[in-house]
Image (cartoon, rainbow, N blue to C red):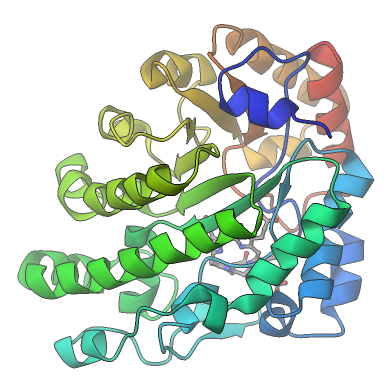
Length: 340
Ligand code: CP3
């Protein structure tokens, strides 16, 4: 068992820098596309055998040091009694957005074992196959709420911010339900065998820091407290576009803070204090010519040498257009230049 990733999460010495990529299983891989041609995205997410297959693909092909469960942050939201659709090229859609007390009241806090058993089954199957640690994950409550309130992806998040500012009690009720669901969901993943858990706060960076502190942070804190009470596996918190939020995110009690590319990795490490750090090369830097990509990785590794623990990753998800050969070059460069 290669436990380099888990050691880095805990701030222990590692023989080299572990690497995995957000969205490492996905459309940039012909092997993934082949599976995807046979089933819809939601069918894929609900098939433990296929989820296991696509989770393993990037591990077998590139030698990443951690696997991330194949699923989606919106899967447990569907289980709250919501209709969820994925449209080709448009992403997720909730045809009935949650914008009223009636809609919030209609949401249930589901038992994950009963409503999304395929996720826990995937985790159990993967643990039998994997020689690297398995990361479970969920969306952070604020990010999940934006999808429910907007009815899908958004640019200005008008409906979400309007609810925050005009109907704070309604917003709070909604966030409490999402938080309860997410906490139970992550606890179930830990029980099923996930060896680390990552919370994705993809839209945290659209908030003013004072609003993040009031409308996003408390719900993440509550989930981390619940998890701490039942497991000691590493907890990773990734706030996309979160450079202005670090003074808040360092108070959450996570083991690892994930960073996007807008903050130089050395600055991120200094600001993260006792935390291990994960990140943060621009996903588009994978399109650099080989030598310049390798040089950039070398520089990042040098800038990260003071980290208490360092996990190399992208600053956000890999783009579907990325050539797989470039991923191989990057993973090999991280391993080679960090001493493997
Ligand atoms: O390899 C992995 O990282 C595990 C799988 C994973 C997916 N989604 C698969 C997926 C993970 C960890 C996610 C998280 C997720 N999903 C986030 C947080 C991370 C981030 O990118 O900020 C968010 C915001 C979502 C919601 C979501 N799912 C969107 C906006 C979209 C459409 C945009 C897109 O990239 O297509 C999805 C669909 C999705 N989730 C795909 C995959 C592989 C593409 C679906 C397909 O095969 O057509």
